[in-house]
Length: 177
Image (tube, rainbow, N blue to C red; front, side):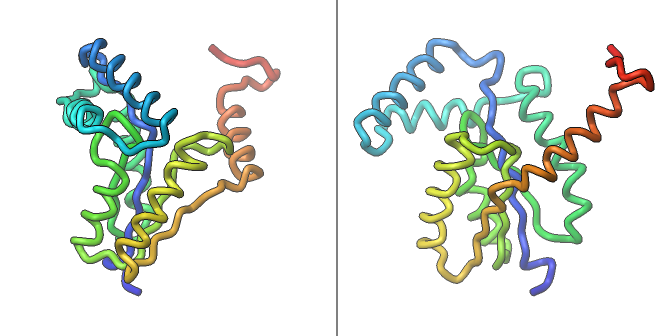
């Protein structure tokens, strides 16, 4: 398979823009909690609020999380040997994972690997929501190979974190500020 038919989607959590109205966040979270408790699909009102926050205009100042994920994306993309690449967000920001995958498929991707920025086991997004959405997308696109690169090898994550810690420690073992 050529690199042009391979894709990678980097999925981050997503953040609430600093200038987004707080009352709308509260309403969205209340509707989400009610839906989850009842085990029902998203209501029209919740969907509209979800779309509104995802489409809210953003800058690095109003959404530093999005800016940070996009910065990581600029570092990751050149390492992927020409594979199609995009970012996606679990909540509060666009595009969604489904939208990012559909864009890649429309562009010719036949094999897509999804990777989360959330390394540790136990998180609802990485451990439950992403796999559920991937299962739905596999049914919708049976001719496309969709792989979720999860769980992370915690030994490798620990090594990476240790290397990072060492960059911030002086020779005498004291942490620099």
